[in-house]
Amino acid sequence: MVVEEAMWTWERALPLKYVLVSEEWDGELIVWARCAEADGLFVESAPRRERLTFVGCAPTGRLLKAAERARHRSGEPVDLGALGLIVDFPVPGADPEGDPYDTYDDHHWELLTPVLVDCRPSGVDASLLDLVVEAEVDGPVWRREPADAEWRLFNGGGGGSLGECRRVEGLYGNRPFPESPPMRLIGCEPGERLLRRLVRPRGDGDRVTLLAVDRTGRVMRHQEDMPLRVVASRPSALGGALVDLWLAEGPAVRPVPAARPVWDAWFEGPPTEPGAWAAFPSEGRAEWAAFAAARQDAGRPLPNPVRHLDGRHVTDVQGLMCAIGEAVAGPGGLYPQCWHTLRGCPCGGDFPPAPFTLVWHDAEVARRALAAVTVDTAGETPYVDDVLRLLARVGITVELR
Image 1 (cartoon, one colour):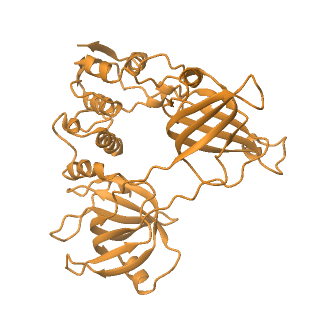
Image 2: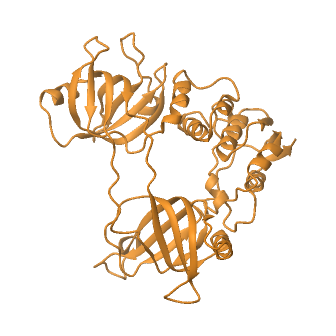
Image 3: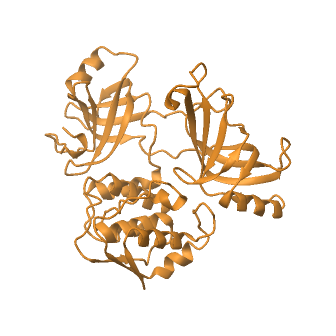
């Protein structure tokens, strides 16, 4: 069974919202529990700003332009957009003449909302720069800095190169492991496996997938590899032999509370009316796009040779993604394009099944709202122009109105 394509139900008057499942090595599907509600799924993550120093940096493209702006702003922070960082290093003890996949390893990070707070000639080489950056560091916690490493900077996840540096101070060693707050599942109907586990608790816990389903039982979203460590269980106030389960930790990645109205909207089923995403702020629009991406049929294009994009509410990047997806594949739809190509990703992007004409109404709304946004590696093209260039490259004729 393909879990995401299943329709999940139970014989109760309460709406079913969540299902805990896992898959055995032989493909057998284990249903651990069906649940009516979850408390603690929506969490406001506390941003952790860290200060890193890119030592001996040779920046290129938009990172070089940002460094030049910082040197003329006398300490005023410069927004850097999204940055990616990869550290390549030889595996200790590996045969240098062997397969490169076995002799080299790498560490990856994303630097979220980074700003450049200082730029100065480097102490290791006056022809290079030391860049002091404040950002949220997203990625694994590596304790030991590798030797003989190459430190490479990229234009966000999957983007083009933005230069290299000798090392990054503050990246290794001191970062705490991220904590996953506890969560309570309310009104659960345990499966046989979970019933046995509740009678005979075990300390380690299994790895399960949390499925969020809509009112019809269709899977809306899923969170894989979640630890099922039940620390307490009680009869549920919802009655009906249901129980409430307290988990030691919930999913590693959770939506913010501002996204809850979007979940509520999609719980009623995929949208049927256009423009429903427009009522939400940027965080909600990003969540809307994530729901569209999770749909099995989200990228199925409309048959019309001419599609219309309603641009009245395209006031942010997230809104543009929602509007294009809706124009191409209908309400709640997705345009299956790798948007990292705007950042210089070498994948080339995804191509629509057939060329079509996209009539972009009220295009000036997006052009004004996104005038200061640029994500191309060179840092020269406004965001809307990058999008138009990409659409033209994949065969879409855009008419701006």
